[in-house]
Length: 443
Image (cartoon, rainbow, N blue to C red; front, side, top):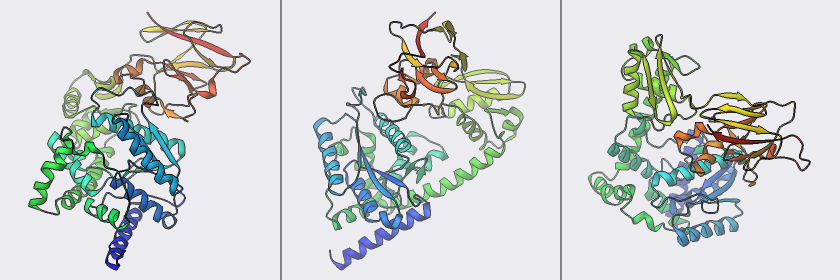
């Protein structure tokens, strides 16, 4: 490597290390799992983390996701990543959608693939007590902002990709793609190319291949300026959210209508979004039209049905958001028929055809309730604890039907979910003692 090249690499390393410290991405002792597709960006990220793991005081691992879309090419990518990790002593977690029994749609969308990928990341991070590092760059940031503008978005959407979101961190977010390419070249680092990156049937590829060159023709620093704008808006968005939160009760999902309607127009939708965040479903599928309808409801009385089984009720000057009562919140189960939702649960100590079997002692309390965001099950497949939301999604349970599925609890702990499975801790023992057999039937 020439002296000029060494200086270039050193500057990039220093800039990335400074960004990690400034953003507080890692702390000493962190287990960091690099999401590695095998492409240039993710290989550069993995190499950077490996080169500086002692400086950052972290353990470096990796994960690769095969969505089940690209056949042999996807297997080639998985083998490439596995070979690199084997040669460099990196523990690798492979996720193959087909082997996991995921039904791949005939025409899978980018959103479907992203949902599958991030669902796995969340599960892996929880299981391994780690953070997931993704290889989003400054160029990805700028493209995301433009893409959201084209689709229509508010201030939150214009903030782009956050450097930290829960257990996800993005060390390369302030790095232009051209610098990544230079980093790859100077280290003579091999990578694979996803042939779908050139397929303009995907909207993001059209933006990258056709529109982005025109923007750079106007200003070569377009990505830097757009990413800087997103960073400014992110800080302003957080400040406005804080102002909105001050007007809400500290707990619960209700707001005084007088307080909501007296708030500045810019804060009212934020107050409602913050309340929605307190529900199990969050606010993902609720848009501006729903927020406007909620404000209108707050001016009077009545009820309103919203996506994901959410309903709003305005009574006595209080607007309350809650999950629709498609099933009771909790029902104590006894032997025999137990009314539940639109049907009933049959509970027996004797085997029944098609029944779910779980272990529950005579002195323990067996109940059924709707699923909650924090519910997790460790199924007998050895994959570790997984969120019930993800398990239902993998089995094709539509969002509007998820609250109809009873979660069976033993002394308040989620032990099983009908149609999903039984947690390993509550599987029947060979002795056959303390087993309940449960069937769900429609009325």
